[in-house]
Amino acid sequence: MTRSNHLKGYKTLFILVFLITVRLFSPFSAAPDFPASPALSIPNGYAESDFSQVRRDPSVIPKGKQVKNRADEDDLEELMALSYLQGYNPATEMANVTRYDKNSAFPGYNVYASAHALGAYLMDMEGNVLHQWRYDFTGSKKIGPKEMWRSYWGSLHLFGNGDLLVLFNLKGLMKLDKHSNLLWFYKTACHHHLFVDDTGTIYALSQNKVPISEQDNIRDNSIIVLSADGKLLKKVSLYGLFERLSDDTYLREIRKMARDDDASIKEGWGKLPGFVRGDVFHANSLEILDGKLAQHSPIFKKGNALLSLRHLGVVMIVDLEAEKIVWIEGPGIWNKGQHDAHLLDDGNILLFDNYFGQEESRVIEFDPLTKKIVWEYRDPEGRFFSHSSGRCSRLPNGNTLIVETVNGRIFEVTADQRIVWEFYNPHRVGKNNELMALIHCAIRLRPDFPLDWLK
Image (cartoon, rainbow, N blue to C red; front, side, top):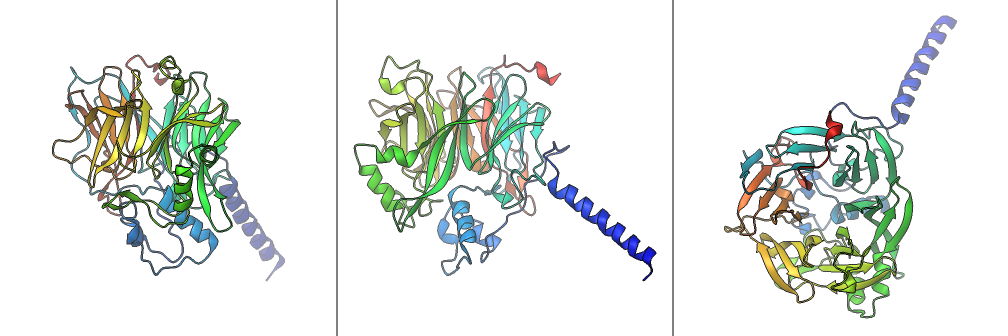
């Protein structure tokens, strides 16, 4: 080979290496279109078919299969513990806004995140999309390409200038501007829920594995507190809270669940879907109290945190300053598997009771002091059911906004249980678009919410 050919070969090789390097190490950048969520990355020794019903029934995974190394075992545990597939239920013809009673529905705007892609939408009450946020994580060193199948936008907070705070499941918290440019990113194994108080301080749920004995580990959950610019201020371990609780009933149950392979929803009902050994808390909602009800009880002190813990079946209030549980209630009014607890203006708590029946959900409002249910929503035909996730919120006019996650449905009901607004996710997932895309988060904004930034 001549010296000239050698030089041409080296030049070609240099160009290829340069292009690959640019691709691999390019920074975050806003994507022109929604990036589709990546396909499942299944741990070694398993097939995609093994997970087709994993959230409904963990026993569908063949018992004889073995993971090949510690990393794959961790992948499997996290899949079972916190990752939600893009869709479970067969797609229907229902799409967008299917019902709207303008005289009875609370007016405003809606923000939601769909599991079909990494992004969020702002839409009006008619279902018209007014704005989108999206972000392309391809090539990012901050998040990396590994196990992107576990990723979705699980919780959102929209600011008055169009900035959007996003909980990117198991990856981190990030803030985008109205043009989807990254303002900051805080890497943590966050999940389910974030909350922003009136000072701009950010609260979120995070997790990490901790040993509780020589043989047993648990997936501890923590409340993390961040400044408005994404700097960590505080971290409170849930396991530490239960260690300090004078009644050790829950601590004994936690240690038992660290060794067991399943947990029961209710006697006679069998396993709680999604439970794996060590995932003892599975916190799924977090709300910081504003102190307006503190005169009724000190448990409602400003800055206290209201949480829902799915696998213990617990709703509790934590004094974050003292790092102490000040109120706790276990299953009984509701069954294990519940989601999304909210303190209402009258001191009652609103809760998504996923497993009211074996195939039926409901939303309840109960008095935490008397333990009496004062209101509930149930579908008259028993067709309202979300076996995982689920959201509920009380609107200013007394109506209740409900997210039926697995059916990709958001709907609003009146106090007398009439549906006055209903939206079905228009997006489909699956190899042949045969499944409804999940909706993990939806927010109703007031009609006077500032939208000047849309211009």
